Length: 165
Image (cartoon, rainbow, N blue to C red; front, side, top):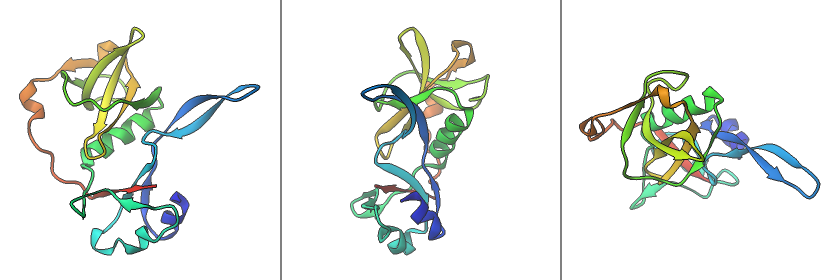
């Protein structure tokens, strides 16, 4: 479906991670979607019919029938994680927690929540509209706590839209 949308002139982003899948005789590493069932597609919502008529596209994520953009900082953060090539994986969506900012390393400037899993620190980034999250393994020394008020401001609306597949 991504190829079909790209062929129609749309800019798409399908973030993936390496997942170990067990088959009957072996274990293979395969690229899997960080947000299963979704890909991100930049489009003009007033001219969305060509995207909606693409094979495999079910709908554009909307609220009360109005397509909703994903915030640009959220997309940029996911791109940074994918580009870093650090071990990342889907993560349950989190709403509360102590916000942090990455001050060092390949993820410098990202903000999210830190959780510990199996004695390893992970940064959790969320796409709020989808209520989905992704986590990436980090070094604890990269992290600095943020003041709670710094996360209370609203980011300007981005131009990215999401296509459900």
